[in-house]
Image (cartoon, rainbow, N blue to C red; front, side, top):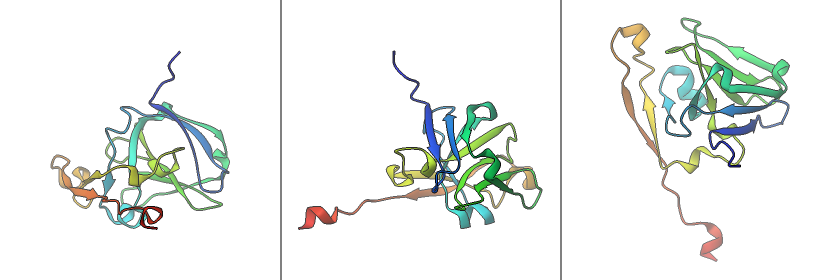
Length: 147
């Protein structure tokens, strides 16, 4: 039997928070945001339904941060401080999980990550959501190859 490629396990840095995430569409929805909080946090996230996140341990050590309208919730481990996931402002019925917390995944695995314009959020402007740009990662040749 083939396992679900959208179902992945993940954790925070210290391992206190462990979860299983069922992604809506694999990594096709990966994005970053340029709002004041996300700009500082720097995480790349992928969307999932609220019932697509199942905590295996440590839900009790999560803390949440809200700002501005208070709709979005940004969750992080209260022990190591790693941002694990968020409840989205644009659709509070969706979560988005930090790809760096998913086992075997790095934000540097993606050459390009679209950046949502959170500075001009549709909830503030009444305008449709728009893309602010694209973050690009260009890998350098490995040091081990230079020896």
